Image (cartoon, rainbow, N blue to C red; front, side):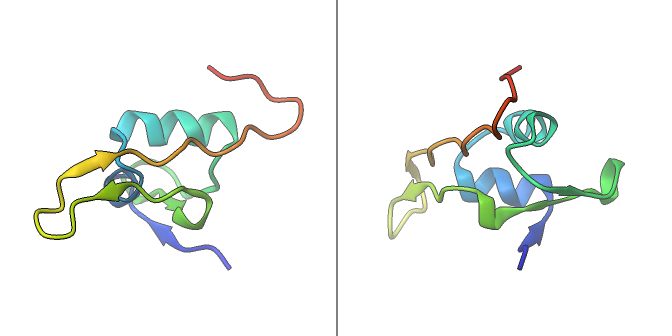
Length: 74
């Protein structure tokens, strides 16, 4: 079952910029539902970033999701 979130929420979860989330969706790495500001992304396809337990500072971003078979990275 997909876990649909905004691009900003997905970016925080993965520890990546919002533009990276948009690119991953365009490459087919993430499920995107909707268009424009109402678009939602499936966070269950993302790898969680490592953050400091107390400060929430980013220690290591999550690994990128795998490309679908036959797709090319942008």
